[in-house]
Image (cartoon, rainbow, N blue to C red):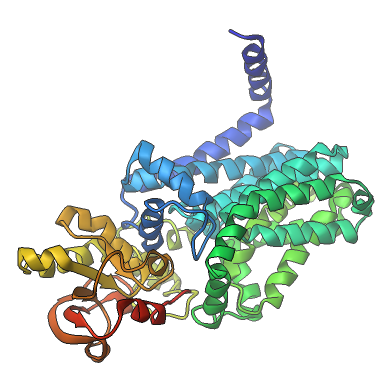
Length: 523
């Protein structure tokens, strides 16, 4: 065994011997098992976006209309190693969620917190229902939370040690984070505000922050290049989403949403964390964290149509500082005697909304439970709802769509099948047919939504197209012959995904390339 390996093992043993580290590992393992065991049950099925990400992972690129490429590249490797099952696709989100809880605990230690502070912050990280949602499916969001946590940890270490190397750690975390999701830009703005409006401004006279900024730019450059070569498709995507499906969001819904998305039981933790950054002597050196949090909040409020979940990664700050504040409160006799009762109450109350985002109940039981406790149906995209919130409804009906389309496809003659293409109006339908269509012998779909439009008609001449969804009048405008060949229905799905007509359309009127340019839809 090499000297380096021996030193690594000794360091690992040294850290594992520390009670706080073992406590952190305990909560991280709990977090992982919550998701892993839930995934073994199937979790109500594949989520719409997961199917789309799988489609993207089969067409690796420097970027995509709706996201940078990092999480898609990771997914491609994950699929290569583990496969396409729900357990396989959701293994990394469970693991990354656990890592985020662990890093949050490290932040608590850097803030001077002990065992109680770690317990409080870890419970907050585990019970946050938006965090549960993000870590229960594969998406860029689970990685987003981890990159925020790592960057905040590096920032806290920078405050404590003034070691300039932590600038490079921040640059690496934010740069890779941006290559995963552009929302890390908000954290970057928050850090700049913290430098300008706090005693940390002395760093502005040193080279390290600027080197870190250059590192961020360098890591994010592939997605910048992709956007330049694709007419800034991501900016069009953001603009359309803000005007369309996110138009119902406003500053009031955004701010009120923080109380629900982070679990109402956790309000006592994160509010204490925010107040503590201004009122607690031990946290005074870390007051720049408050500037970061409030700066990011101000940016999102100013955006007008921000979804409440956009602020969720920043709560790693307030969960950590909240843990420290509550630990200090529990050292006082009148609070200390209620320590166990308060923590138990937070857990019990905090468990009530967990089924909103963790699919642990049979679906019929969930519907009754939601009605009993008043959850109702929820969407952040202004869509018509049915029995389930969109986060669950978007897991139903996908294989049924592929099966129904396959029934129409296989009624065609072999000659017709050889030239037939399948078109669907949104990326969920397209991706579902791509994913489940392998089982039913279907060709890959084409579509106008987000990256499906980028991928183009894939050799289709428009001679014979099976179309899933839409109305007959629109089809008659662009095809010479149209017949309604079937209807695809689903239970528990979103209403706009139910009772979709399946059309067989023949002979596109006009030029296909011209038609393709007219149907682009990014949102």
